[in-house]
Length: 164
Image (cartoon, rainbow, N blue to C red):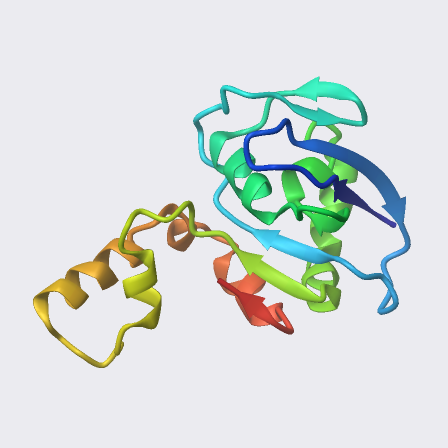
């Protein structure tokens, strides 16, 4: 079993409301998995998890705001919320299941962070070019915290459909 979070619809500026629910990990389960860098800065806004206010990192708060949908609930697997980080036995057990979690996800969403004004250019440019602006854009994108994480290779390689 794993926990999935169901993020309720809302506008970007509204409180992030989440319901955690247990589910059997199987190929019939419909969810997306989030691959992101936790970050160290706490969000100035609490998320509501099972109706209880909870502090999350600013990067996760931003990702959830962008990923929630306007009119329907979305099922996501997000490690920091779906695994009880304070329970060593659970955490160790769930880490062993992460390969399956990423393999069975409908998509693995790779969250590099909010747009910084050049993201559109970075992702849609000719990546074979070496113009100075494009070269600096490449450096900026590969300098984002996601690329420095230990689990990046596993999360990307196991994804059936990685989405950046």
